[in-house]
Image 1: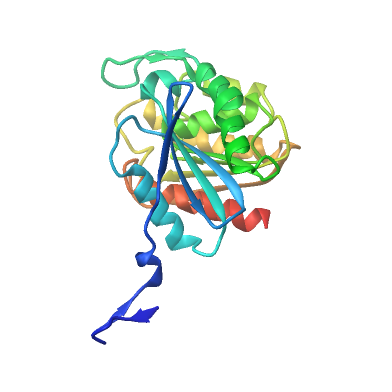
Image 2 (image 1 turned 180 degrees about the horizontal axis):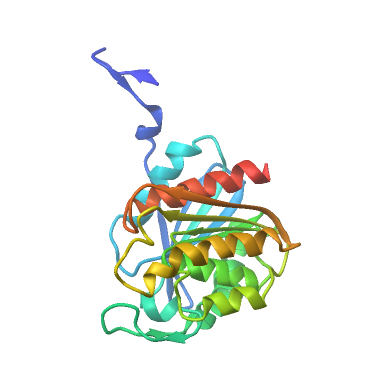
Length: 249
């Protein structure tokens, strides 16, 4: 910390660090890229469509928890949340908007366009690549670990593990590579009147159990947070990244 010029108080140096976001479009999907230091892990994360301040909030939460760590944050912004992050088709869990199951298309873009672009542009092919997500994007991140061998760290925060048939899928699949997995959930998330979403607690507990039995799972944790689903997604994601950093280095 340093003292203000007028000597009236203390400011945190971290708060003076401006976020410098590089924005670009790769094969139709917008990337928001922020670099802290010169090497470290490459963190890919799925974003809500057009939600202002999401990258900045995540960045600030990361700097609060891991200010000295080097990392490259790559947030990719899909067009349709329910469509682009759902691994397969499913009926609406609330409201009337069903899930179109285009997650495979998003994963294909990530593997064939997004990751190669970042590796080529920032020369980070040899660095660890992690995938993080919140809610349905958290489910997508976890699903990706079962479908490809690119990511050595997964942060599935308040993941939508209530998704139709996920319980069947996770019992029938194993991780594609050595990987550390961080799961988290809010304590109030399973205490809902929505019968579908109320399964999220038991599903997440079972997910942890299955991962602990998976020979490719190097480190696994399930962390419970206070509050419901919408309680500070940026900080919950940052906690997941902090855990991965502590486990990998």
